[in-house]
Image 1 (cartoon, rainbow, N blue to C red):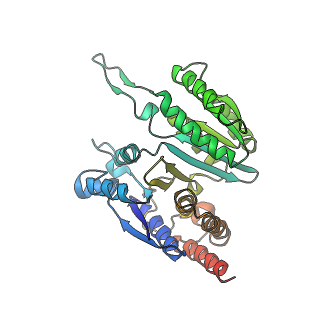
Image 2 (cartoon, rainbow, N blue to C red):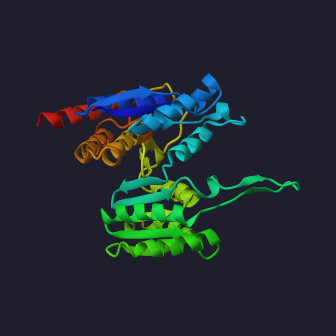
Length: 332
């Protein structure tokens, strides 16, 4: 039976890097049924919504969702923004655990970010006196499930888990820390430590190699995962996987839509391909294929670096290098 994969190319360079991902995916020894749906700004332009009903229905039926990029200045200031579609899709699929690996010289850390709660999903509004508010809200059950996922992932890595919070100030963080301690009782083989977000941010910059697996709430995870990407090569190389307990995961690069280089052939597809590797690993359990794609990306970064990395390679040059490596590996 073929795996059903829904592709959401989105905006800017999204369609270009998605085309590379599809090219690589369909070259692998897998049965896949790939379809494409409108999403983001492109969907706003076409039907007035960043997440059309047809797109959401297709995603719910799929085994996995691959997403390119959303947003751009042409939709700034509108009542409906492309990013609203992404937030809504995460909530609708309940992909509560966002995995953000950061790998570089002497660094191999994994940030597990709670993705469907906290500040981005809490009550918000404007009071009569003009005060604007956004509320960070969490239920203990939301914390417990992402804690369990983080402990399981840490168990498969270095068996060290750092829970990041702001428990010296925030009630939500104090609850978060209590729940983490309670869940830890079921994982005696994993060492749990706690850290304050500001201190951890500094340590990621100064000594990123000291970290293994980290878990944190939504806003902290959004910020610290970009910091970790910055010290290991930048957002152009950073991938992510958003997972739930059932239904499809969402696999997407962390970079933006880069409208300034869209259509020039200069887009770096490394992050999209690393997201494809996360899909193979966490979405399908095809671990060997995932490692093969990761290795191919590493080779392509050396052989056909794109302009953002100081090279002259095009998006297609990079794709050719990846496929050449994979073909040679299969022939061995």
